[in-house]
Length: 339
Image 1 (cartoon, rainbow, N blue to C red):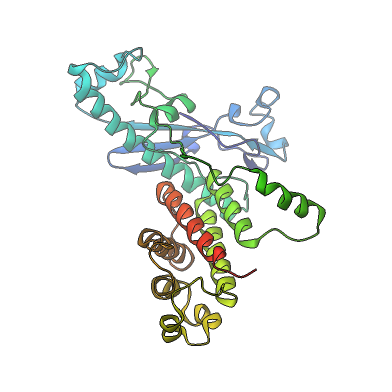
Image 2: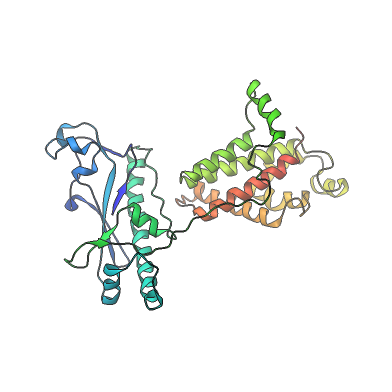
């Protein structure tokens, strides 16, 4: 496979590790990954020869090659891989083979993702090439990745063939019934006009939420989670400092819980305890569901693992749920905040 590294690519100085003997290796589960470069990996390779490399101060590698080798005695599967008919879906007799092919493909792509990302992490962290984004590979969408990376394979010394362990392309979409709250409506227009004409700053909570979703869209999941939890901290602090009268539980109940110091409670309790203990007592379930509270608690714990335990990966599926529920909780807090 050939993996793109982006327009800015990985930068080398008067040198490029060319060929498999200079490659990077990673082995796991009976698979051996080799990452390697060639002259054509470099930007503007048409005017670059191997002899030129020591004279170039800035060599940009915009792609890296990946070779994955394995040994198997499943002759039936190997035969199916090399002769699969992609013009149709597998028939009943081929379903078991197609399933084994896809299982094998997931293992290959998992190893590829981890190997490439470890290399990119080294270059980004050790050398400061911050523009190198992690390689995002969804193991439920390996058909698209096989096509994107021009995957091909050979059995032994046989002919090369198209390697595509799945014919299923999964597309996720958000469907809104009724009015989507993100779409502009006539009632938004006076606020937009006033904002453009004034010199005020945008709402910080909503700005952080939008930033989080933008980072998630680019695959920067850890940063996205951090921004979202920061938005929640801001929304909670502002709510505690200035709650709307009559928006919470009845005053006799509320006063027994927080006395006269609601503004200081989030700081004393911390974010996790505020979401776990304080907010469930202040808001009726009809205003703030258990599902939202539980998801936000999980998001805070995940953020803490990233900050304090060195966690590197944040699952994309979990992140989507976190961002959605944090936005919901922020809206509840903002609706309960006196402006």
